Image (cartoon, rainbow, N blue to C red):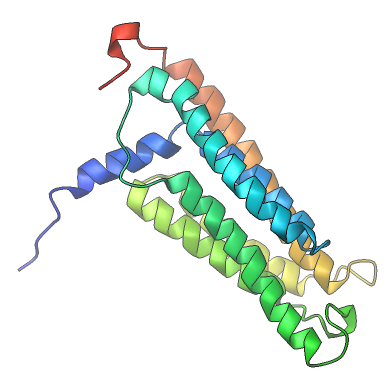
Length: 208
């Protein structure tokens, strides 16, 4: 007998509340640039963890200033923007961990001669999985687009013959930068539309 979760619509609505205004997309875009930079300068990985905490707080602040003032406050069972930030961090760190192991056992660590070309597949698959889960749980179609872009971008930056000027490390970096560009453009468009179509609520209607 098929049963449905009666609380799922409420959870879905709460998750949409955290993502509907587009500010989360902008925060994840900024972090994707940071993680992409860390793939070129591995010493920045530790700094990326600091930025993760800062951007998670920034996402909450932006939500309060944009979404809560227009569609009311919602108590969230979890923090979807933070989950996406963690997914982005995992995509970078796990991929670099694999590269570290491969290059360590084949010569100097981070040696580009032994850096595999397929690293965008690892990072892109992790990003795609995170976006797919978010899209399903929040019922926001644009996150399906992000998932498809992550998977498609992973294959593209793995296989495209860039030539000798683009090394295997650059392929991974370019994937993060490309996804950041997509998230930034989409996030701005969503935010502008949200602000234009959702007027600020009266003071007494902030908490719902």
